[in-house]
Length: 325
Image (cartoon, rainbow, N blue to C red; front, side, top):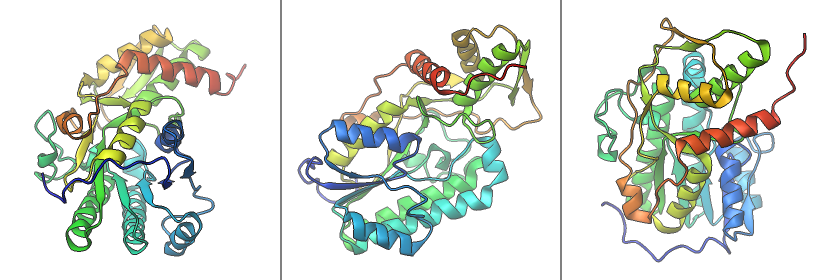
């Protein structure tokens, strides 16, 4: 394992912590977890107040929050469709936010910097389970390569700053996340919220079929968002090395089987039509999660069935009332 010798476990409770993207899906759960952990000084700025693509905004943010710990969870993200439509924006915004923020952490002598990457950074045909040392063995899947490469560049920056400046910057690779407060907009959502919404709305309309992207053969791994927040807090406390760390459940499921599970949970009994003109995305995704268990004791606690039920319950209780026609 590369990096500096591990210092003692970092007590986060008295420290000023900045969570970028703190109003987003993962960020909001992370802020809650930190506060449950006893952290009293957690800043969660909003994009409308501090646009992280703007260096001056980052300077204002650091002047106001004076962070001792920074967790960079802000990102411009979306599903396969959003990545296909916004490759330039996703590359630029994710790269420039991270590069400027990490540089600000260096200049302001932040004690600990935690940067969240993406599973999309792995090569398209990575052997399963994905091990962190395979990250550079090929080009990412084309539909999300700009996003994945932008995030992977931040790993290089963290490692370079550690080597040159002794900066304690760590890089985590969360797998596909899901859970309450996910993005259910069909134009930009990931697969689980999209499937939930399609099934529920089909029931509302009395539809007999739904159309899904691809052929259902790719596999994915999913991590419940509250487990992800817990993993990030654990890593922020205890992980201090240069090498990236996967965060996942270690369980793989085909998209077709996932769709069947969600249909059963929602009560949708209609037909699923697979639109093979749409891309499948990466053929398989499943992580080796042994490093996270070894280095800071993280193991996912929420099974997929329980997590899907909680996500569905949240969606049903928070979505707009169905339109009556």
